Length: 203
Image (cartoon, rainbow, N blue to C red; front, side):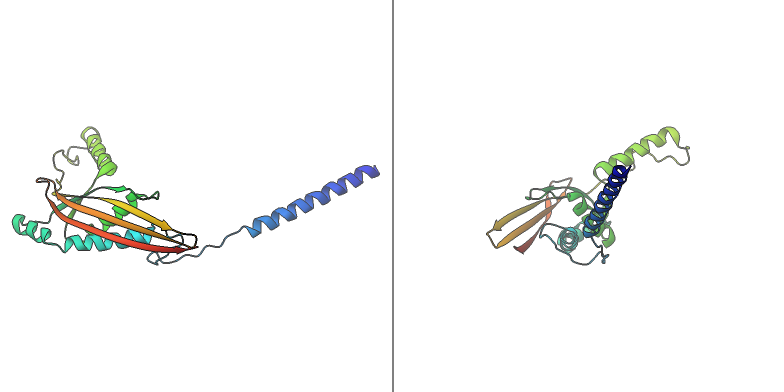
């Protein structure tokens, strides 16, 4: 009986020690979170981030809208051009989601009010599927008809490249974004834009 009590006491002490150690480990690993304004410029690693995407999209769309192709199109056609943002290939050394960059560009174009932006990619396919379903399931007075899509006048395409140079103390990361706006009917390039970013990361 005495041995049993001693064993139980030992087991309880062991359990208490384990729980205390676990608590210390858990609380020592807790991180703090600080909410900041979405427009705050933060660069923790030197890699391409949301600030780069937003600022490059703003600068390059503003440059494209300030060029002569836009006025020439409006003068010749009496309307705003329809633009579709196509593929932007990531040829950099990093895994970068170009979808976020494309959305930043689309937002800048739409909010400018100077061009009409056409839906592209998977989102366009989803809309067409919905229109197909409506032909069978929607009431005649609300069904959306085929052949009414707005054809794009221009397509924006581009590529994101990078170069890395490093030694034992510092690393230089160079990004270059090249975008081209092309007349879909004639294949004529009406605008070419380039944006370069250099970052130094000290070790």
